[in-house]
Image (cartoon, rainbow, N blue to C red; front, side, top):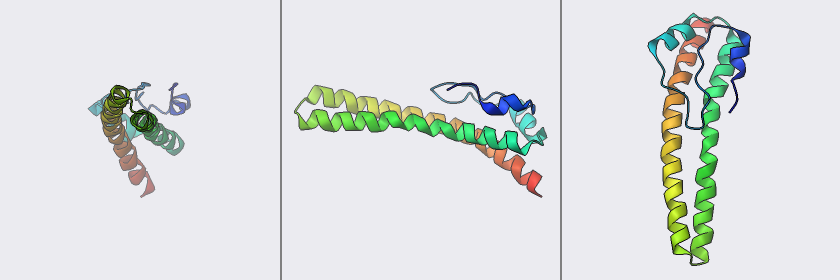
Length: 116
């Protein structure tokens, strides 16, 4: 993942982090910066960036498919390894989405305030 587009708007929004393992942990200063932002387009881009972390779930699908193929061809050690990879990938996606949801919730709260 590259740098998020919302940072280009210079709206004072914090950097969520650009990592395959998910956004960084959110601090109260981050919430304060989000709640102070009046640029709806930048907030929308930030929310979209947070939602993009679900794309990490593709590895779960690939590993599960690999496990099915390995099991069908009676390669049990390959199937077990692929299942292990799918489980670890699933846990990674859960953590990335948990962190990303915190960022999304702050953006949603700000957008709700601006909508009033």
